Length: 578
Image 1 (cartoon, rainbow, N blue to C red):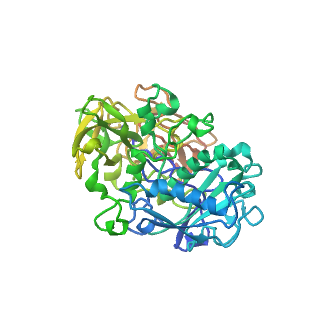
Image 2 (image 1 turned 180 degrees about the vertical axis):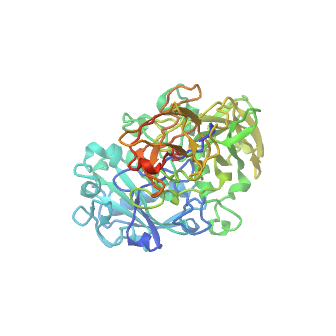
Image 3 (image 1 turned 120 degrees about the horizontal axis):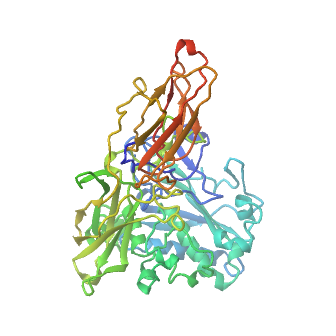
């Protein structure tokens, strides 16, 4: 890759369960129980890719068709203080936190009960992650699109997450779990399952925590990703204020284990904030076309403001160059009375949130361990690489125009690990950006790119261009330096081998200062097995996180079975784009 390889990708959304249905091209099933699925990006949790989904859907966030959700609740009780009817009201209250957002065209209706009382006696999960149990809650049960299971004694939780998972000791993580487990090839959700652990709802004091966790899981069911905003509410750096707490998003990534009860850490923890409302409304905007079906709501784009653009590296002349993925872009309303950016009226978007997180490459392959293509999630449209969208900016006080300040920040690897396109392997951005003040008005959309000053500058490598049929020769001394580049770039090298020898290849990733790093890139190298066979054998598999320099030092001694025929082996440092 060249030095601007910030387009490197991260592993995409959830692991996928592949029954016969996906092989037949009917539905895409997602295994979500047993662990929290990896989010795709800041904003939408799932984005259709260039394969698997129908043509033309790539880059489209997955949603429930027409914003309408029909859900079914368990026949049993959740706990002694939440018998069936009370549990139903508890669930309806949690849904209403999202459906009451005035600019979101979303509605959730309880249609009825499941056909049974789901318990540990009638549900189980197989070694492959597939659920066996009542037929109205399994992923294929699209006629009961969302099922809410009341696990009165924790045995359902034990069955799905493992023995002991349903105990009161695990309420911090297992009070509520589940999510979407089946999506259609038209980029719409088809089924979701949510399990509520009754052992965590035995007293009135426990209920606010259960409600908070249920709201968060329902946010994921609706299609939201995790986000990062006002993270100092958790980290304490700088000490949070009441304004920080008022803007702290419900859909933040993780909670400290000390937050029991949840009110110990957050005020109104279960109530969506501006960032949450904006993200949901971008997925389900109230428009002139659908407002008749949501009569009590407001048009989204007409009653809010939008800032959109791309985060970019700077070139040698200080102009915008390669888009930069995985940067958290934050917009804060500037209070005209103080001239300071607000900690309450704020929203965020992760750059590249619609772009493919992991397309695979010739070394690691183009399919995951289940056999499904990596590029089933996210678009390959270059215009979406590094892009952000901050639609849904509110203007307080009844004004029609205001200023918002744009800033960028890295995604925190400790507290926001599941956020954005590098979920699980967060990246320090290259360079820095000055705050940008943008004037917005209700109903208007403003384009504003963010330039990362002092970022790595793209440099041409001495060996380029290369192809499989025309590789570059490895330097005689066996050591060379190459630079990272954009999406899809692969360089090929060759050297002559000798019989009865061995090969050692050493790859070191360097940062902006040419120092070894594991926070910027994790290279993948492989040996081509010979021109007659034409495939790569991975030497080491790791995921390329981001840009900067890749220094490759190769000690070249290789066993060549037919040296007399001078068959040339090739080493391929490739973009392990995640």
